[in-house]
Length: 196
Image (tube, rainbow, N blue to C red; front, side):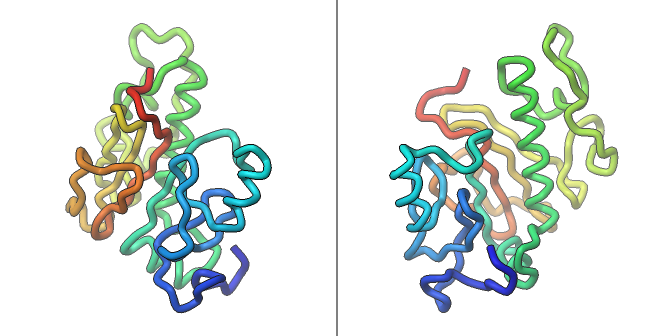
């Protein structure tokens, strides 16, 4: 995204609903395309399909829903991710590192900071910032516990935002759904069947 870009390049008056997970460009509802479970802009859709679906960032599969507070924050500071989003990205990367080392997804986020009893491949801790830990569990930037799930939909991390109140039914969320209020959800991995 270029400095000063406050909206969708194709529809500047359109309401921004997310970000292209390939190029980082803001996109409106009219331009948003779902490709392999991720939001992309029409330009990147064409580019990715011509390259056989290879992503610029092939190290992970992530879908980040930016709504409510996060989009408002981002639009007032172009090019700068809100701290809530950065925190989800950091924990998502730690979850992926855990999977790379152990061959499985963490059962709960506490495994990112303390070694499971029977895990030989664990090389953590994967998260080291004590400011964002509470009782051995990762928190968001406001000190609220992060929610985490590994289920038939995939692997996800969520925060209730600054107010600490959930406006989203996480159990009913699909990978194409946007969370409510200031809730944020990061899909680390999306799968039709249960992972692992």
